[in-house]
Image 1 (cartoon, one colour):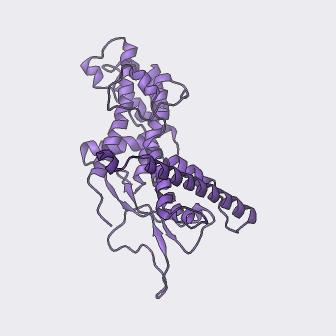
Image 2: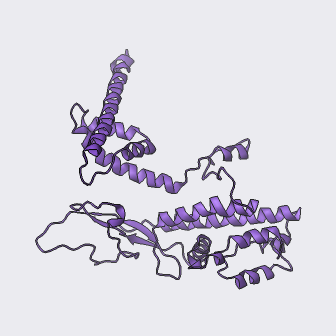
Image 3: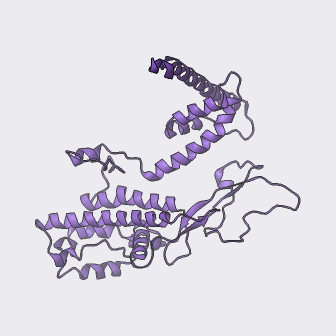
Length: 336
């Protein structure tokens, strides 16, 4: 396997730092609004988001702001209470696994030591000759990085067993032996920041609906930033990446299946049709198929009907494309 590109840990660290900055920018704005004026330089330096694993540690953090910190961060203030409500200390079992605790651990490590520490992981090795009844039946490998010389899978001598590897990138949670999948970790923390932390810091109540958009267009200026933000997408990068990978797998698997059906277009035409569909459309069509481990007759008929409709759509796409090609002037016509 090829080494991990250097930009992956750098981009991961940037993303995590941006998430923490979003929280602390929100606290700063709320503290300034409470003060009714710009914060002094001394008060501004005391604005941060703690990650207290115990009540005593949160009290200690609050006391350090009693004299020079913004009034909104002092004991009894609304913003102080909102910050308290988001602390890892409320997670009685394993508070270090709280999204805020993980975020602070990653960003402190990136700030003082190195960017995110990443490594190749193979969380799953699936036998292709054995069909599991459910994904949870597939054995999981240890949550640790792959090391040179490691045995990934073994089979009896002389026996060929087809397997599928699912390599991914893991990220080390600082000062632990945990190596969660990088995209899962970024997705979970980003979702918590967007749907829980920032809304609760602003409102002090359960997050209102609709949720804050996951992203909006920033490559151009907007006359009204609030309008641009409200029109942004609520589909986060984690979901888009998951759909992109899943759709790529579906396209690869379904192209041959549809092309082998009676009256189907060529393999190339089916592939072109599937490539023309948005990822979400491909996945929606795939979800119509019903897993049939015992070859139930009703399930088989249902799936055949779904595949026929997909084939018919591929035929219609191919015909439309052929008509478009006929209607376009040839190069010779253009010269004339």
